[in-house]
Amino acid sequence: MARKYFGTDGIRGRVGEGVITPDFMLRLGYAAGKVFGEMAADKRAGRPSILIGKDTRVSGYMFEAALEAGLISAGVDVGLLGPMPTPAIAYLTQTFHASAGIVISASHNPYQDNGIKFFGAEGSKLPDRLEQQIEAALEEPMTTAPDLGKAWRIDDAAARYIEFCKASAPWGFSLEGLKVVLDCANGATYHIAPKVFRELGAEVSSIGVSPDGVNINLECGSTKPQRLQQAVREEGADLGIAFDGDGDRVLFVDRNGELVDGDQLLFLIAIHRHQFLGGCSGVVGTLMSNYGFELALGELQIPFARAKVGDRYVLEKMYANGWKLGGESSGHIICADATTTGDGIISALQVLRAVCDFGEPLEQLKGRMKMLPQHMINVRLAHRDGVLDHGDVKAAVGAAETELAGRGRVLLRPSGTEPLIRVMVEGEDSVQVEELAGQISAVVERVGNA
Image (cartoon, rainbow, N blue to C red):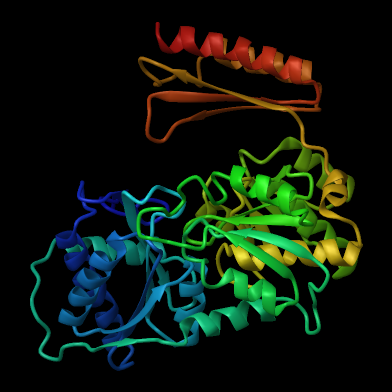
């Protein structure tokens, strides 16, 4: 069945447009409650409960109330978590043995956007089957269950999650002597991350910890790290850590103010496991992961596989390969032996374990992996049908791959939302990479606009 509402990362859009409205959220809450209620009845498990958490967008209050009303009308109990990182909802859903968890967030997007993401009872994203059942229930009329649900607020949610994050590091792990600047993006980690790192002994300075409902991700956080880079340099900090609005992504800044992206962080976690924790079985990246990452892992004989872009696909390939580590260059990193989903705080602690155990500053440690020059061109086309299979395009790609001689790669990827084909070339020589990307783009543009 084709999906009408759910995308690969839940339901997302501009508030007040499309389905991102209070009326839709009311119906979505009822539909989800009906599906999970029927599942509980089949298992004779009693009345189900569903947790709701959100980031700091002003629209979150409105959607929280609408979802709560819909769930209660379907006979489901509701636990309200308040502003919490997305991975915290995944963890707390398991902790409270809830039937599901709902996150109200649009992640790294501006405050005008919002969205919904579901986690199942195990703290993982819902399988397609359940999302399809919820979509089907959305088409049915709402009624009121004879036994209405009840709502309660979980006041110790933040404290529980803080202890969970700290427990992801080994007993006795200490950040004493480390000076860190945190950028919480005025988002869901604002009241969580500073406490985690302080309680582990770090000297912490924080920015992006004053949410007002409209400043989430505004010139701050992992998508806008310039303020953090400046703060690290000005304060003479050892490093900086930037989260996105819902706390499932993380990027670092070294003491020189240089950005350390998700590929580099994932590599540091992998080599730490390889050297100190008995080995790293393998790492999943994406089609966009830097080729230098793949080469560096290969030199250590750590297996590497690429998934489609999106944490859902990364996690699927991790499970398929039986591996515990994967992620994206955006900083969405999954440590499956520590948590069930991407978690910025836990991933940051894994990186800091590497820094501490290797005994090297971040700016030195990251040099163990050489990032290769990457050049991307977005080619806008009149049509995309058959372009990637066209003989001239294939020939241009083949010629570029021959010239790269196994020390680079070519990727052509259609945009999911625009009439574009993204042409990306990586290699050791930045001039060569840019020239090859231009040559292939010219062929793609000619074929696609013929």
